[in-house]
Image (cartoon, rainbow over all chains, first blue to last red; front, side, top):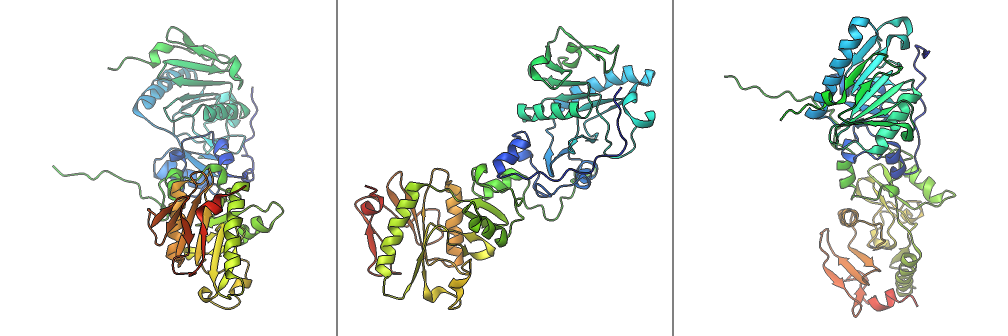
Length: 223
Length: 223
């Protein structure tokens, strides 16, 4: 069982970079269109993030003082909701934890704030076994799932996966609608990731024992 | 049926740029390696600029709307710049008209931008006060500015720079292209030069320094 402290770590000092190229790599080489300029890069706070997410309904992540917009799209949302529904159908009757969507803001150990498209937080992973009440709780997404968009970069997803595991995740699912595949990580290393195709079954592993979902169910033909 | 206006979240009032890419285009699509990130973009001052120029690393930077931008440097560019500045110095000797400065000489242009032309001629008459030239940053624009173009200078960047020089009071700007052995001469803030000089021609100072000239061939002769 992962033990998690209820107090968030003090905000890490804002990273300093020699030049914009280094900084851009630290963001995961994301398209520059996704980088928010107001508040200026390097100065954004969790408060700013909440204004974007809650008031303006713009999904942004906080990376070392810079807000970076999450790509959104109809297909991505559709698939994420299918997964969230399947998870909830399994989790709710058994009170195993909490499933949240793409606007769930989670505090990472690195000090960054990430918004996994779908997250399952095991009840064993939260202090007091209660649904977190803070706007940006420091709880690990026991399972974090991301539906990959055109403008997500592989560098970005590598960094995110690493952060999830550093924060206590047990499983990370990267869902690729284009190839109708899912990369399953049970640790950050890419070499050990398993790639599931449409004939495979996704399972909850140690993170959510007993949960299974046919991969094909996430990619129904909607034409 | 009543028409409904789609709800649009109000943007913060100082949101001048939609995202980093917007800002970056306005800066002239600079290579990210040349954009200094410490201090963060938009937050740098003249003091930061002087720290970099005068510091141990002697990093040649310009200050553009609160952002420090590194000037590309190179031996070939430097040799060409020295040729031009030498020719100007020889011409000016004993005339008491003004002075020549090099790539480490900062000029404050309009809107508190600070530029470091590779070669500059400043007439005494253009100075706001007799002791203006004692300040680390000259408070007025160069009368003539010349830039030797490097690989990493972008067209958009140079267009922007030309505009800034002329808006600030500079009367003549030459862009020297070692690769094509040509010189683009600008007499006003325009995207297109007044003329482009090729090897058989002569660069002069069009009414600002009557009698000054150097052949284009001599400028590019690095034997």
